[in-house]
Image (tube, rainbow over all chains, first blue to last red; front, top):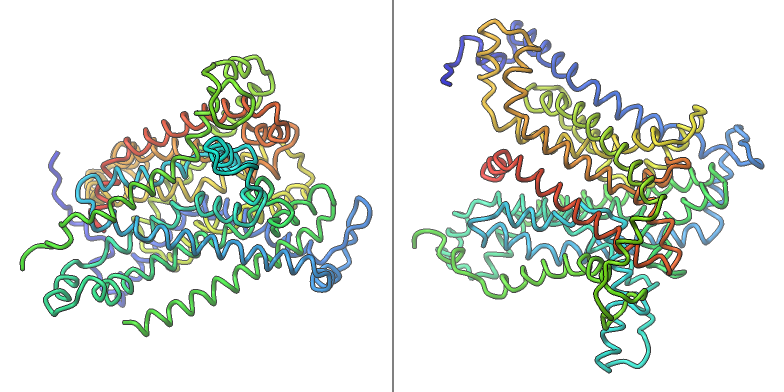
Length: 309
Length: 271
């Protein structure tokens, strides 16, 4: 079918923003847009903003038997600050997901670079191959690592069969490194995609210019490719760091006593311990810590990026 | 010097790294089906023999089927609701200039970055304060929130991929907004809608954290798996169940990607 642009086709876009007609059209355009977006915004408000608001309110309550004392008090926050276990678990969670984030980003960067610069046909196939495992159950991917790292798991039984070790390596399972490895594996797709997108955007003629001006491969990488791909590295880091800090599946299955994270504690408050206000308080503290760290990371990264370029 | 000669030149170490990366990405997951056919109830080398026993045992288990039905019900409802809302949101985002669009998109995409446990407990608190019983309905609500960003992100490239003047022409020829949508927009974005249905179904089917906090007495399939992980005796049949889920998830995602391939091709080329 052949369709020519009608007289209405340039809609509001052709009009200067200052004209009254333009403003009117734009307002109605925005109104139409918002009416389309409103069901989604409604769901997200009811499903995200309201629940988190109530979580904040509940964090100032206290648990009394099976009910709540709704008098506002900061008792939970005081307890969280005073008892060392809370702070220790929070620091450990931030540390472990920080390590997982770094490992994932560093290991994934060459992969993203490879697809962006060295795959010419079948880019889509590579992207699908990389993201495919990510669509399967997170629980199953974590469970798979339990199979690999277990006392009688793949690695231990293989090494024992080969006669390389006498007894199973106990540090493999139920340790912080097991959690970090599993997290890095489970979140790889989140690292590769944003870095791939920003690497793909780099104008290849910049690299040619650098070569013509005498830069070698390393200088070319450090002065052009890396700085220009930093936005991707930043979003990859945040996309992994933020969700992994609250994880409790991996620490439960693979962490053991030394690998427990703050998510385990929160989950316990809502389950076995049955102290919902304390659980709410810990969730709020977790959210605020993540927010503060993510924000300062973004500020620092932006500062560095400006300095480089 | 013409062309990107040094870029075109194959980089052997990098190729090797990429291949190794894919192996490490897939290997742990592929151990699940491998050991699900092993006769030993222990997950260890050497393999002792080939058997379908664990799959057969799975067939006789009532709770597995009940959990599967629960997951199917939740998954189908979730995918329809989130794709339905996603169509309008994706159209609004791609077609209209909205004040504050950036922050709005950020808000909608929030479930992708905020730890699942926080949404889980926050919704749990809200639902219990409202006096609503936990059930498959509350799980579905949680899943819709998790799936909406995926639905929208899947359909945005489709909406970007076709010329808006086609819609305008339809309007010029006298169709109203609804008919234009059904007769012009909908057929154009249909592959994106199918892809979104499949992907959101997959996400919901595999989702665990929301289900953990929001399900009542009816477990979804991942919840059932979680409850069985404590019993070493159940390991082989859980491996069998996990393998089936893996195959189905992979197939659905592949189908979804294949259906939406044109949009993704334009999306990749535009970058």
